Image (cartoon, rainbow, N blue to C red; front, top):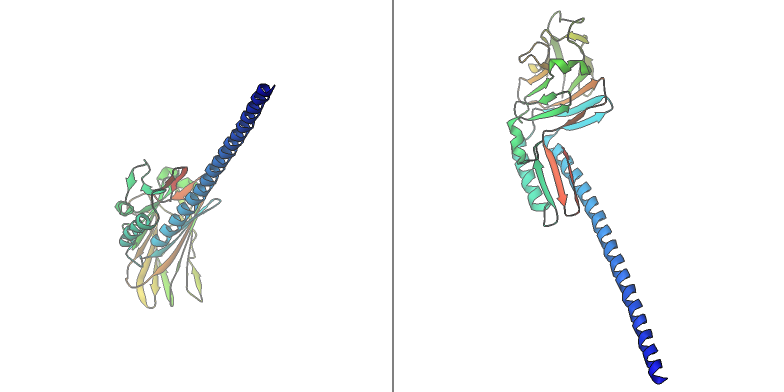
Length: 287
């Protein structure tokens, strides 16, 4: 009898210990799963905030903001550049490498094919893309003394109208090409141009321009002629819709361009991709 009791006691003890082990196993597994989920959540938040913070700082370096509002692409710019954009891009990338990246997160800039690039490589063809229309907003370089808006002729019909305004300091006057060529035309641009300072806004009196012909507007600021020249139409190259050129140095102009399309199916970005990666995920998208 004592032997049977001993066996039962041993079995009971074994079962109790087995239950304890099972409980500890389940608890440990649950804690690991919770830790993994927490790590993934933290990683996702980190990716999101890093990606958006870098994008916003990139816009500050460029001193350009891009926005899509339904059918409208809006680009706010400053011409010419008020600082050395190339040097700032280089410093910005070094700052990211030194202060953002560590052993748990990788940040890189890529071209459209996924190849890693340096931000200063954007200087090879500095522009903003509007796709799928293939419309470009570009500068010859990051000095930003000129702006070009170019559209393939076959995609010009996507454009409903363009509004362009410049803000200047001090008094201004304007002049324009006499008897501008107006619509109807094969390529007719509804174009709304205005100049403003702190007290006054002037609007160009013509709105329906035939862009098979060169039409121009010159802006005089504080007695200096041809500070800004705005051209539409038959400009080299033929795909140019709009050309803005700073003639006189020493002036900073705030520039606002709005292109209204006949569709909301487009996107606007720089030709560079930002890739933020952690062991738990990544965000890869155009700047």
